[in-house]
Image (spheres, rainbow, N blue to C red):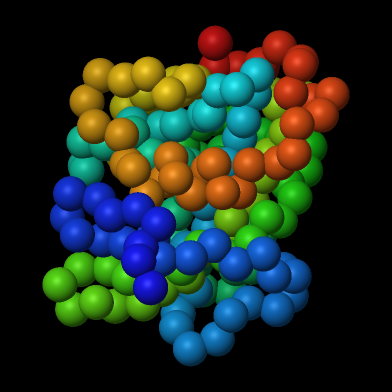
Length: 167
């Protein structure tokens, strides 16, 4: 099976599974939650200072934490944003590193209505931006931008509303 996307480190996005949230795929760890937030054709990305790359908000699931709670926490920690609700989109399947380690990530969608919060740069995340497919300064994580397209909700009334913070 050909990967859907490959980054410059050789990590692969191999599949996106639209399964029920309560039925994660088996056979590999699920250590990660990601948030996809589209607004008016633009995708919210964060700049990770450590990796020097623009990527989706998200991160590791803490012990005892559900993937959904990790997504809410990571979105707030990385962007300062709180959203009224997240909808589950599916599971991303990755093959990572030279050891070809297989992992899954839970992927959630956030709407752009009701966004509240203010971004403050920190040690890990240096900036946030609404990406519209044009280059941002620096690298953009191709696995994340491809995943965001796969997880994207169907166009509807929310697609025409103006984005909330960050501007």
